[in-house]
Length: 514
Ligand code: HXC
Image 1: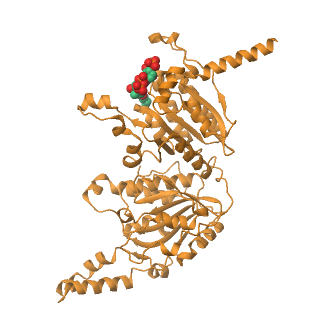
Image 2: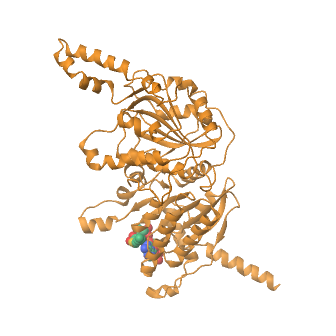
Image 3: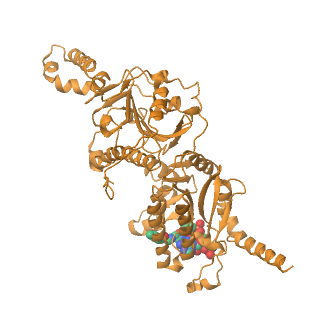
C-alpha cells in the first residue's frame, strides 16, 4: 500500500513538472504558432523512445524574489531517445518557464546531456527557445554559457551536433548553435541576433524588427548561419530526421547503409548539360542523375547558391556532394561559396563521408568587392579543406575547369583520389575568349577584321588547350568518360577506396585560414 502511494506521488510530481510554465504560458506559446518543448521532442524521436532525465531539478536562487518561484525542470528538458532506431541525446529549452532563460541549473542540465552524448558517442540535438542569460542569476548564467561553448568545441568532429532555433536565441546564446554542425530555422519563429532591436535603436537610432534583423530567412539567405529553412515546425523536424539518416553516430563509425537503389529514369544525364558552354543548367539534376533513388538532400540551399552542397547515397552509402552551380553566377567561386564548401568538406572528412565533386566553373568572381571582402583568405579555406581531407575524394569535370577554380575544386594536385572528365570538358588556365585576347593581342589588333581574327584565335585556343586531353596526357585526370558512365565510375571508385588509408603528418593541429 505504502509503495503504491509512493508511485502515485511520483506520478503527481512528474505530471506537475511536465506542465512546464502552466496553462497560461502554454497558451501564449501556442498563440505565437510554436509547439511546446515536450511536443517538439516527441515529434523528433521514435514513438515511446524518449527517456527524460533531471525532471525534478530546481534552481537555488534567492535574489530578486526567486526563492518563491518554482521553475519546472528549470526551463529545459533533457533526455535520450532514438530516431529511426539511432540513438540521440536531446535538450529542449522550454520558453513557457521563465522564457527558457538560462540559469545555472538549466545550464548544468544541458552540459550533463552534452557529456552523455560525448561519452556514449551519439548525436546531440539542441532545441533553442530562450530569452538568453537568466538576468536574476547574473554571472552564474554567463558561466553556464561558457561551459556549453566549451563542450560544443570539445564535441566538434566527434559527435554530430545539431541546433534547432525555435524561438529567440539572443545575445551570446547564439554562439552555441554557431559552434554546431547544422542549424535549423523556421519561418516567423526563429530569431537569432547578438544585439537586439532595442539595443540597435538605443545605440544607432535605427528601427528594425526582430524578423528583419535575424529571422529565419535572413539566416538562410543572407548570413549563412542557418543550414535548413522550414515553413513550419513539422517540416523542420522531418528535415532533422532525414539528416540523421545520412550522418553517422560518431566519428569512429560510418553512416548507416541503406538498400542500394538506381537513380530515377526521369534524370537523363546526357540531356542535362547544354552543348553550348555559355548556357546554364541546374547541376543538382546531374547529382540526382547519379545518386540512389535520385534522392539529393541539399544543405544551405538558399545561401551562396553558386555552389551546391548536400548528401546523397551511392550504392546505399552516404556521400557528400560539392558542385558548382552554373545556374547561379555561372558557378563562380567567391567568399561565401568558398566558406560554404570548405565547412562541408571538413564535416564530411570528420565523419568518414566520401566526397564527390562536380566541377563546372569559369574561376573566381572578379571585382573590388570580393578582393576587399577577403576572397584570398576565404578561397584558401577551400584549398585547405580539400587538401587535408583524407576520406575518398572523387572529382568529375563536367565542363569548365579554368584557372584557380580547376585547382580548388578537388584537383589531383590537392590529392583527389580519382579525377574523371567528360569529353567536352575544358581544362585550361583561363576561358578561351580571355586567353585568346591576351596571347593573340597583336594578331587580333593588327588584323584587317579583328573580330574575325578573334573568333579564329579563340577556336584555335579551344582546339589546342580547352579540352580534357592535355590534362589526360599528363595524368592529371584519370579517364575521360562518357556522361552516362558517371555513376558506374563513381561506384567503382568508391568500392576500390573502401580501405583508403591516408594520413596527415603528426601535429597538434593545422592552422586553416579561418
Ligand atoms: C529572466 C526572462 C528572460 C531573461 C525572458 N524572461 N527573458 N527572465 N531572464 N533573460 C521571462 C520574462 O520575464 C517573462 O516572465 C517570460 O520570460 C516571458 O518573457 P516575455 O518578455 O513576456 O516574452 P516575449 O514578449 O515573447 O519576449 C521574449 C523576449 C524578451 C524577446 C526574449 O523576453 C526579452 O527581450 N528578454 C530578454 C532578452 C535578453 O536581453 N536576454 C539577455 C541577453 S544577454 P514572466 O514571469 O513575466 O512570464 C545574454 C548574454 C549571454 O544572453 C552571454 C553568453 C556569452
